[in-house]
Length: 225
Image (cartoon, rainbow, N blue to C red; front, side, top):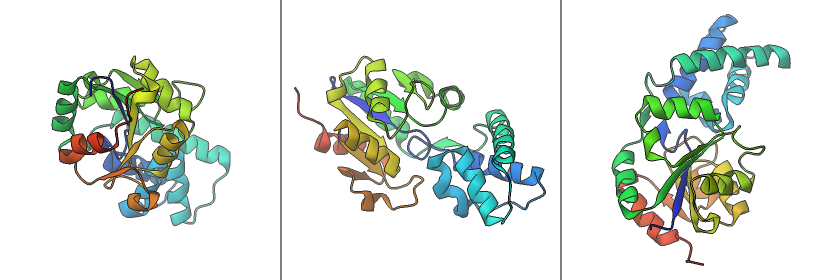
C-alpha cells in the first residue's frame, strides 16, 4: 500500500466529537435563554458544521433569530468549542491500531475535513493524533471544500501523494459525493453523523469497526496507473 494515500474525514469518522459539539450548541442556546436540546436531535447535523447545528437547535426550540444573530451565536459557539475541544471527544474504537497498521504498509494518511484547519489541528494535537497525518486539509485550506473534488485531490497532493491512488474514508453523503466527483473509491463508516444511513449512500465498502479497515482498503483500492 506504499503508493496509496488514505484520506479521512474528521468528525464522525476519525473522532467521536459529538459530545463537545453538542455541548457548545447547548451553551449558545443558554445564552439566549433557551433550554438544551437532546443530543440525538442535533447529532445528524454535525456533518454540516456548527452553524447548521445552531440552526437545527433553534428550529427544535422554535426560536426565531436573524441571520446576523445566528452569526453572533456561531462566534460564541466556536470560542466555547475551541476552549473545550476534547473534553469528551475520543478516537473511535480501533482507530489508532488501524492507523498503525496502515502506516506500517507505507500508506500516506491525510485528513480531509470541512472543519476549519486550525480547529482540526487543535483537536488532533490535543488528542495526540496530529503526528499520524502527512497533511491536514480543512474547510479553509484551499479556495474550495467538500464536496468539491479538488479538496480531496488537493489534500492528497499536499501529502505528496498521487491523486489517482487515493481512497476517501468518511461518514456522510458529502464524503461520498466528494470521492465520486474525484473518481476515487470511498469507504463509508456506519458509526458517524449522517441524516441518511450510510448503507443507503452506497459507498464502495461499508465499515462498522476500524478493525476491518485494512481489509476494506484492499477490496476497493484503485489499480496502479
